[in-house]
Length: 424
Ligand SMILES: [Zn+2]
Image (tube, rainbow, N blue to C red):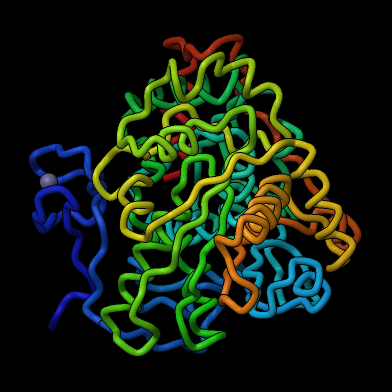
């Protein structure tokens, strides 16, 4: 029987037989990508994103409702002057069928990633996060009972909650920022049976995020002409472009890749800066001078990755090149104003990053990069925080270990090892 999918190196084309590997046998930095044996996609009568399981690298399904939903909003269409604008919304907005209770598209990554862990019973995944990703993994862990180790900066603790009691989570806080959380989690992978989830390198995360584009195409019947998203790492945009290529091969959804329109929040806009100069390499002195200061000033702090998968083969630069992309720097003022417009039109609060996306869309309309009748997918990567608080009790995830630095000492590693043995 033909396998459901194969994993291929985007740099050398090698078929990688270990489906959980994060690079090919030559250790190329290029992303591995999934090639599915089903060239076209059939929508299944399943929970959440598992309706699109033909193009997910998983077997079986977790009973969780996480999925994006695509809809039209007449008020926002009128305000933007775009007659063919669709929102693909990942968050909590039950009137439109969106029931992602952590209000973030990171759930789309967490669901297939943890589903794959069910097949790897002897190992535990570790995830470093600035907050939203950790919350998404916590929620899916609470529902699926798949254990996880989460490492977050202590000042993002307020973002760590679930709507279901969690039992299998080891939560570690570090003094410092997101980069310190990443450094700490790297050190903890020295503990036996603890494996890193891989970020953009993880095919399950990217193919989970690709369900945004898939949902649009299955709703509308064709690829959009434009895809608009605010990015921190750009994983979602890479994923959308990969899925669009699958639809092109399927042959009946259009003949052109959607133009990728990417936004970052000024003053921290490294990928916008490099792309506008046509450069594959990010040069920190030019693209992110005074990075820490700039990061401290932005409205949407989830958009501030200092090491995004931009230059690597199959990464953001290639996505933008493939799709004839455009990049936008959005000010805090533009983002806040777009966020208000969104709430006024839809009655639901967008995540700050989603407000940045809408602000970029407005810039694209003003500059005539997007024309009034063009088909547009606006990726609304999160929202509905106010609504979810009305409908659910938010349960804080208890902290297991508080570290005064990014350094887990020998005793802490022993404690983690003990926890892993109890939980696998
Ligand atoms: Zn390779």
